Length: 395
Image 1 (spheres, helix red, strand yellow):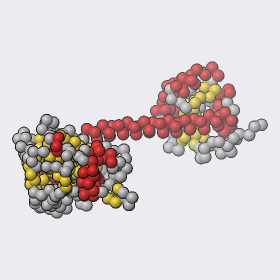
Image 2: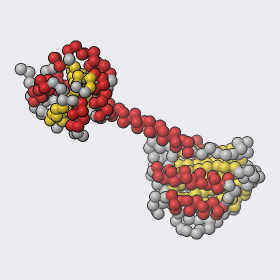
Image 3: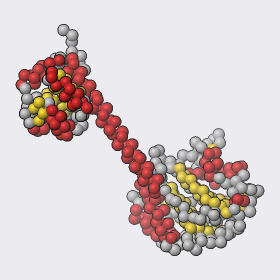
Image 4: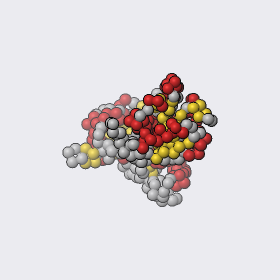
């Protein structure tokens, strides 16, 4: 006699639903010869099987001719009561077609009673369990993909659309979340033109990198846009955002840095607020420099009842203003992997003889390790190129 291969999982609990005592005895005898015999719970009816079904059952072996259910109806009820469990169908010699239909309806396999031997039964049970595991893994993967697509769609919908007349200013924004698989991070940006013609630009960074920080950054951005469209400016906006941050953050250690620019309706001056944030770069009259006399004050969420000092800057007729988060200047460059820094960013732009976010990001490919957001607004083509010198930009 060929020995039965010891290929059943150990431990294995099996629920046998079979009204014929002889067939039930046969199944028990065939499995008793395995090196690792399973624990078998026998039920004569479907309702009895439902009562004896436990969480440790890995496979249900069911006859399709039961006193209280027959055919595919019996199978459907078994699958409904044990959706995550392998199901092996037993059929009579004349019910082969029913067995094939059962597999199509959700069973993992079927056996003809008259053809069953120990080796075939053990192999069928083992394969049924493995197929069910594969089915469950595939289902989980599909659900994860669906959730991922829904999250991506949601996050993409939360990214801002600039409210700006494109004929007035050149506008360029880029957003690179540091977390894998995400479209949003703690960094945020926005651009809004109000009815008086003024252009308001925002860049911000919530400390941290997870979905909670992304949600908080989105809340702050939407609140800022709403306040600006409602006509509020300066410290009125900042105080409201500070209050919102304190109520919405998960812990008191969370803070937010920001830089905002309110460009006058004639587009020749700007009022900046640099709230614990890297200073913006300004290209004006061919000279690229860092806006000095910053910051305006500490980040949001640090100290209560703060007044932030505005920084007024003359822009002129041709200019480019670059606002960015620290992920850009914390890129590591050179043989020693030094931080790029604000001055390094300015030197990179000078070497490129113009400000273009795509060129900047491409040149730092692989060197950026944090979330990055950047907004560039420019007036006139001369604002995008024609760098002739370097210097500080003072109010």
